[in-house]
Length: 339
Figure 1 (spheres, rainbow, N blue to C red):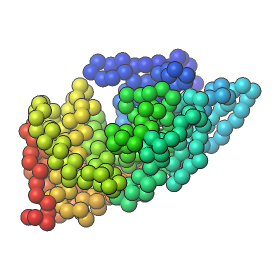
Figure 2 (cartoon, helix red, strand yellow):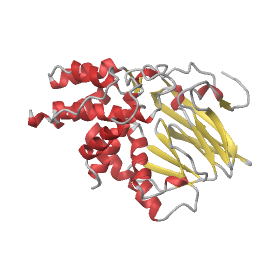
Figure 3 (cartoon, one colour):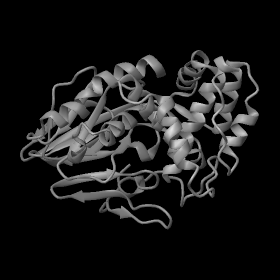
Figure 4 (cartoon, rainbow, N blue to C red):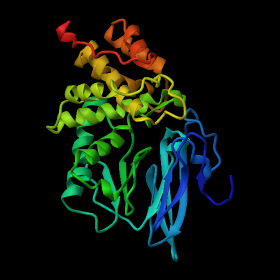
């Protein structure tokens, strides 16, 4: 297939701009949820997964990072061609490319950081330097990392939010910080490799299957790293949500609210409510089996509900109805050991 054109930004009503954007000195691709067609022809649906092989040429003083494992890097005069392959099925919006004046840091635990040469210091160590430990912890909770390696690109420009794509996440250098507001997002984007990339929603109405799970992974990492427990963070955000508008339906928030912070927090609270109901053993068995059974493909909220009921052996319809399909905020249930 051959095609040509000038990539750019796609503007869609009720959604943020997405696609191919210029940095001060480089390129960033932010394709979620509708920006993939700005750079290649595709059926841009999350259910349309495929394997990929991509070759991109750029001036040789730039580094090109893409989703997938490195196959070949070939210099041709002042231009270098970079070829990457993604052998695991990938939704179009997760196929990314990031270009800048970067260097590759020595990998640790299959985590590679691509960053400006001058980026270092305590903030870097406290955030991006913790990724090997995060990887080890998440594997213990969610199962083996689902791809060949994990790359983090840190742009020289500050970014408002980080970006997750398959086997690669992108941050601005402003996230090189030991503050929890930065560290939690480093954990959040890594956890998306299991929840969002290995197991991808079938339809955007089920966005909580990505963002609620990744938000809960933040709370798990908080507890693991000696900060607030998941229970403490759940209680805090339950109290916070109780004072907000009740106009969001988690099972189908609609395009205008699909990335509302309430989707993230209520989604995480739904998982915490499930954990309290079925107990830790069954809860983490559910998460691991979710990735094992549906990894490489797509899944729905109904699939998750069925799996949770299958593994726990408990009737969970009332719990899921109240958290996913009700507008009011349910109370958190007592833990299984208290019932």
